[in-house]
Image 1 (cartoon, rainbow, N blue to C red):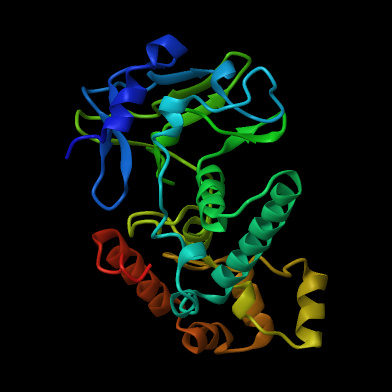
Image 2 (image 1 turned 120 degrees about the vertical axis):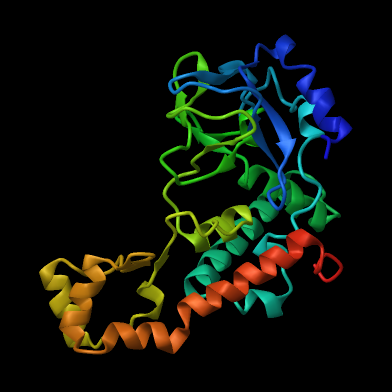
Amino acid sequence: MSLPQAHTQFLSTLRTQNIHTVSITPSPIPSAGIGILATSAIPAGTTIAFVPRRQHPRPPNPRNPLLPSPWISTFPSSFPTHPLLWPKEHQSLLPSSAIRLLSDQQTRLATDLASAQELTDIDDEASFTTAWLCVNTRTLHFPVGGMTLCPFIDYFNHSSSPRACAVTLDARGYTVTTTCAIEKGEEVFVTYGSHSGDFCLVEYGFVPSKKEGDYLLLDAWMEFTEEQEGRLRGMGYWGRYVLDREGFCYRAKTAGRVCGEGFLKGVVEREGLRSRWRQVKEIVDAVVEGGLMGEL
């Protein structure tokens, strides 16, 4: 598959914007939109991308109020895998922790929409939601103003693997550096942070692959008596209970000992955590493959 014309037009402007890349190129990635591939073997410690600060549009910036048009043309026009846009019957399949995150996100969207409507008339709320998701799924941390958009670096897909490249910000701008040797044709990743699968799905619209070190935050599923809660608080083990591919974390095991034999097993069996996530993964895969596009 080749890149859509909007992307090739944007890439042709990189030199004039002083955006530099080495041995990498954006490319369509099956089931993952567009990502970055290595065009040749890259040694560890290589700077493969640099974007100067002046190319980071962020409010307030009266000298550069609009995003560069070739770049904004590369933004997604739809987000079919994002739970914010799922039908309610599909949203109901999410685990409780993801539903809580989604509810918070819906509140943020409604607040931002109300703020925007105070400034201008917004007749098409669907288009506003798409634009809001473009920003929400593509921003990077920035010390002034909290977040910023960043051209080209937003092509990189996420991985929590140690092989993910390092992204750093200094007085000049953002730099992406390899942490290990990368082979020609290999996809090149950065990490969006240490996030659970429910966070990645709700915030970005994807479920981490089976190779990722995903985890589930169990707090929403663990019910305690007042006495049990008091004991755990007193011990310093209240909350932040995690289940990952290795099993329950030490904090969760401590809660299990406080609550008695079979407590943790009951949590998993009661909600069917892993089977529920398999259901969600099947929905996302079906959407990506086009099977549910008409419904979403």
